[in-house]
Length: 92
Image (cartoon, rainbow, N blue to C red):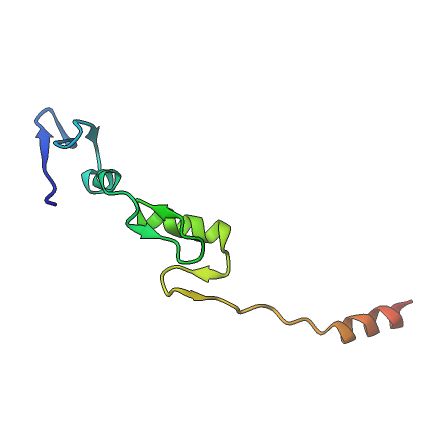
């Protein structure tokens, strides 16, 4: 569907949506409201109208998952527990 909107002459940064009449500053972001569920989380199937909302969801709900690459970031710090225990024993 084509983006259809009216520019408001007195307010050049505002646009009126022809689908619902709402006045907004970012008409492209607003149009996602009319077409829900375009961005789906591949892990839990939650849907979002905007890709940035999906990224925020993944950041907090699935912190090891990168929605841009659709892969898990499994780089973690490896700690040698044996050397930590030895250091504690020597200091006592």
